[in-house]
Length: 311
Image 1: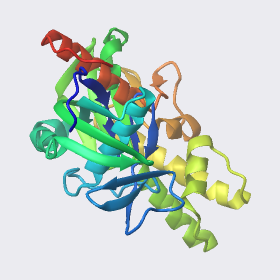
Image 2: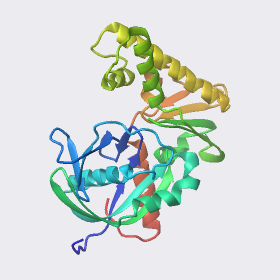
Image 3: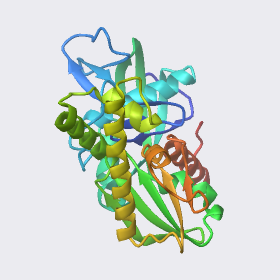
Image 4: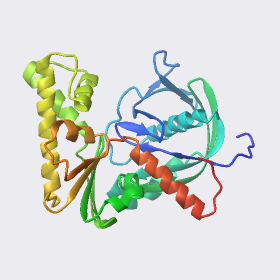
């Protein structure tokens, strides 16, 4: 890497199964390898002599994000987007990242090693050459990071439910204090709803429906397709949301005793297909909230340690 006197840039990345988020960008967590430069891809990555299309699908759920190199390549893409926003193609970088609540303890060290396995990354993204030095990684609990700056709003007993594409993370926050013994991670993400909708459409209408149509109905409650298709997707989503509420009750959710907070990509399903009391249920609809939370927490931690960096 060319010598540079720049201060490190702090870049936060939420490595979701459905989408990768930074404080300023969001793109699908899909990656496909090609022998030559992909002609139709929106985002392309060239690294170690190979070409990849970034964001052309969603990544299949795997409990261990270090099982392959996909999240390393997606990290390169996220860094490139954030650096280009600053007019840079070369910089030392601090990463602020996270893992599901109950996985942080077991997987923290391995994920940090994974992200720093190549300290000096040289690659091409969308025709621009990048030289990035990973100088450090800050790790946080997914979901909680998004609300860490607003804990004063969590008076009394609260349940925080972060619904992602692959997992659903649940945490109790009582009087602004997270309860470490009451954190749960379940494989009940929105991808499960997608799979159920696909199966229902095939079983009922004998149709193979493009995922983009299903996703549009799940996000907005409508789509410009036959009403029978929309109806089946909506019925499936309603059943999925009912399943979420059953799961929360199994973890002792009681609307008489606590407030319920929803966040993550699945929060829109609660909005469109759930029957909840707006006085007792809060929906946080900023899908980049976790990445922004990582950024805030990491900035605070680095300043406390006297580290000089740029945001």
